[in-house]
Image (cartoon, rainbow, N blue to C red; front, side, top):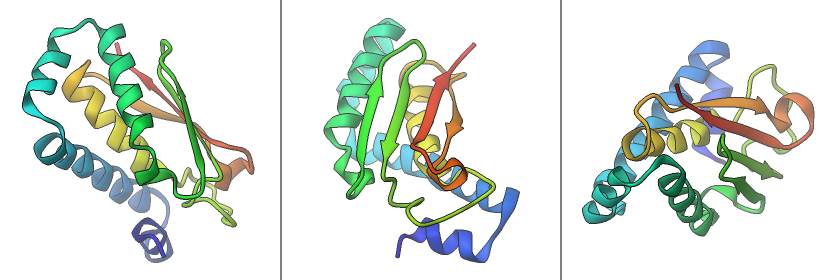
Amino acid sequence: MHLPTVVRQVLTGRLAQRVAHEAGTGTGDYLLLHRMPRAAQRLLRLMSRPIASRLIVAAILGHSWTLEGSGCLRATVGPPPVFILERCPLCRSVQSADPRWTYYAATVARLFQELVEPTATAIDTDCAAVSGGSCRFELRWV
């Protein structure tokens, strides 16, 4: 069982969303600190938003196996960048009033905040647990 699933069983509503968001932000920090070369980070920060966004989206898709499980992650560069996860492992066979994949959205948002635009936020626009469709979020910034 996924840790986010257990968190949702113990916590509900806003508290569960906040914990998922904080966990995702922490995961983004971990990736920046331990998994992404510092030189690559410096280069991305020097690039224009469209180019840096394109490279980060490509990198995320290249490592999508770490989050999609048996699902299928797709993305568009945008603007805005949009991520769509079919058969989300956190949402499969679950019904919820709140989006369930906040953890993933917060992780990606953190990468964009640090490497592309400090005001980047992830906006959940659909969730399989809520609508029965695909999980989808957009990255937006001022």
